[in-house]
Amino acid sequence: MSVRILEGKVFAAQIKQSVKVEVEKIKATQRMNPGLAVIIVGENPASKVYVANKHKACEELGIYSEVISLPESISKEELLAQIISLNENPAIHGILLQLPLPEALKNEEAELLKAIHPDKDVDGFHPVNVGKLAIGQEHLVPCTPAGCIKMLELANVEIAGKHAVIIGRSNIVGKPMANLLLARHATVTICHSRTADLSSITRQADILIVAIGKAQFVTADMVKPGAVVIDVGINRLPDKKLVGDVDFEQVKEVAGAITPVPGGVGLLTIAMLLSNTVKAATLLHVKK
Ligand code: NAD
Image (tube, rainbow, N blue to C red; front, side, top):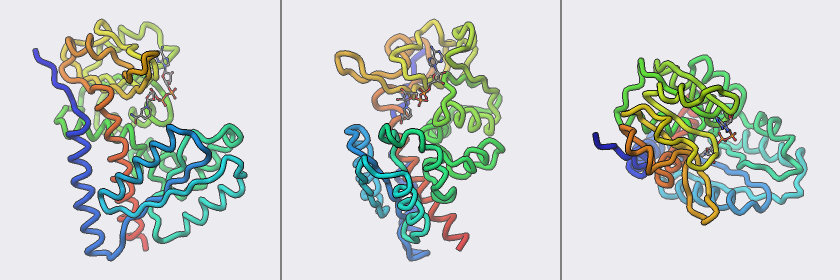
């Protein structure tokens, strides 16, 4: 059986195309431009690259984008004031606080994320949006798991009735992923660092989602023949090569479909951020 390689660029292009159509429709019918504000605190080089990529992607699709660069020395109060002013700014429909925050603000992360209005929370991290997702009222959903689901749907992978196993229980990937799959009628198992006999569970998966942060952790013997394997992990090997949490070369010999790293679901994360921004703009306009 030949494996299907799920190329992120193909699906990201499809999502961006439909976002572009939506943006044009909003501009024509509602006479407004969806707007995204990204706040970046400090000088983290990786964060700077991510933020620049988000800004560029917005420009490509005609979304207004503002990058607010703040010094590492900023206080929690000043940052809160910045967020509140964006909540009240009618030109901004989506607000994203780029993580990680500098060390001095790490403990304030939850409070800062909660200050973003849930209707502008395009990262989907606000407790209101987390709760809505958990009770099956999807509003603004975290971009990476939303991208994984979108990829499965665009690739016509059947989800209902399938056994989906997720390795990783983080708030940004594992847990929202579980809720999204459950809402689409999969039977869901979440595994994590304390799971006993991990392989015996992963071998039952029709759909295996891996979000651990450990290079090439999932090997061929952990995968059921024909399974769909989605690799969320991004890891750098000592020789600087970028790899996922799945041993791609081994697992592609067993899987029915697999995402590569780089070039897999990572490309859908930004596409879903743009999609969330347009969704927020539409919902906020309806509420007015
Ligand atoms: P995290 O560190 O918050 O969580 C990792 C999870 O893996 C934990 O729940 C832990 O229990 C589990 N885990 C760790 N060791 C394990 C083991 N030996 N067996 C089973 N489970 C184990 O990580 P995260 O933020 O969810 O990110 C996971 C990976 O996904 C990272 O590589 C990260 O870089 C990547 N990521 C990619 C994107 C993207 O846009 N593609 C977005 C977010 C995260």
